[in-house]
Image (cartoon, rainbow, N blue to C red; front, side, top):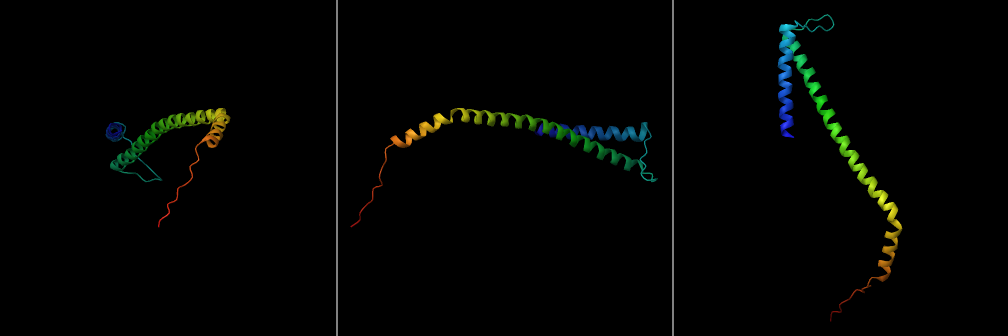
Length: 114
């Protein structure tokens, strides 16, 4: 688990650095919002946020797939348990009734202190 987190952080750093370099040097990308021109460092920060969001979305997708598989396995196990219980409930009830009728009934012993 820790290895995956370290790997994700390294990938985020590499993507941030490479996208920041690409946006400022090669593509001459400028971020404009409502007729306001942002500086190159602000553009790099905005791309960093976008990359971080993409990494988080990747984690959510990966964990949701694992969680869906685990949920399906648990639901299948519960379903098999309920199906087995529903098939054998008369046998279980009959065995319980016989056990309650045949068991040794011990009366409580009271001590008489003098």
